Image (cartoon, rainbow, N blue to C red):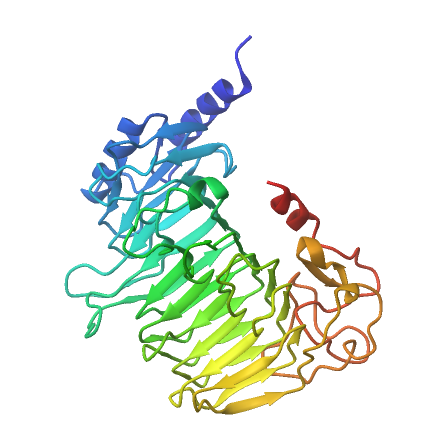
Length: 409
């Protein structure tokens, strides 16, 4: 009896034959390489990958044409696995290299890239933009999972703008931690790393496991080096030595919002650091995040005299908010003494509120743009807004059931 997947492929082929939108279905690495090359040369711009595991040894996919989409045919990100095996044979030393606009990569698993699973930068005398990365599972990158660069490290004229990363799981496992590729920097790895990026939205993702025992890891989510107007919201950051960062040292940001994120770090691995770090960044807003550290490092830090006019409000943490090195801003209405018993399962990283915490419920101050929580439940519920990332509702079933599944993987 023929398998369901066989009939699915036949159905998709018939659908594509009669569909007005031109697309190509591929089921081998060679066919995928050909399809990308054809798209770059003016051929079909939508590439659908049949379910399966693909060995990318010696291969990489360089996308130079605008409006190319590469995704799984089934929409199941676990059913299409592109495994680079840490191979340097491909021209990108990774999996997808994007130098064009309007590109979508979605609904697949990207595993063991030598450097980055996805690397995006401008090409030629123009900006790159409108990139959509969604419903991806990125496992064990050799360096940062998603890398965003401009055309120059220090004097950029073209950059990557107006793009989105959402609904994805990005993780470093124990196996990947043993295979990090940059020996000059013992833990040169992280989740999302953006330079000169502007108007990016990073939302509804889980980033976990970016720590090392022999060095300080990059952040789970990090935008710096002249990035601007970044929105980071509704993400779960689990066991990353540095959670979310705007700026680094003197390489700062302008504006940006970090809100409704849940950040948990368990016991110290030797280099545990900050949950949210703001460095050399002006006019940023950090509000309604929940942070719980088992180790003793600060939950939130803002640093350096070039960090000015930051707003840090309505955050719920169990560790201090620290001002360092001449930074300035408004720090108000935060709670920094949360107990583990306040949450559904703090030990598993589930920081939904458990029961009615009188100092939290209805005690947040309204901030323009605060319309929902990390579950996209409407704010406010009841008489006022709640402090932290979770807005308690009368009818919801508390907890992050999908998070428990992720933590067991």
